[in-house]
Image 1 (cartoon, rainbow, N blue to C red):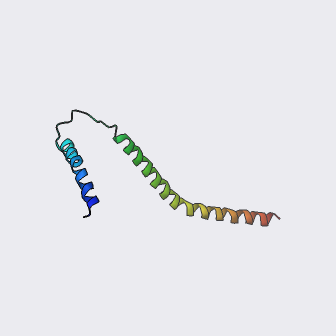
Image 2 (tube, rainbow, N blue to C red):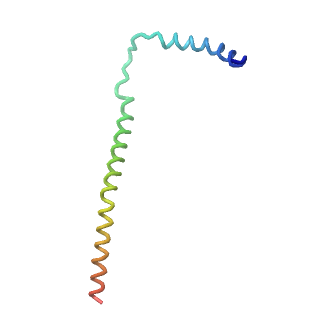
Image 3 (cartoon, rainbow, N blue to C red):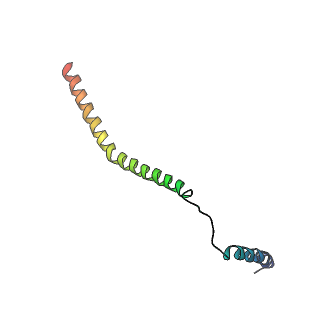
Length: 84
C-alpha cells in the first residue's frame, strides 16, 4: 500500500469505531412505526399488478381486435360491391 492509502485508512478508523459504537449498541426502541412505511409499498404493488394485468390483456385482446377489424372490413367491402 502506498502512503496515501495508509493515511486515508488511519483517518477512517476513528469514524468506523464511532459508527460501530453508536449503532452496535442497541436498546429497545420505544417507538411505533406503524403502517406508514408500508403504504407506499402497497401502492407500488397495486400499480405493478395493474400494469401486468393491462399488458396481459393487451397481448391477448390485440390479435382478436385485429381479426375483428379485418372481418368487418371484408363485410363492408362486400356490401359496397353488391350495392354498386
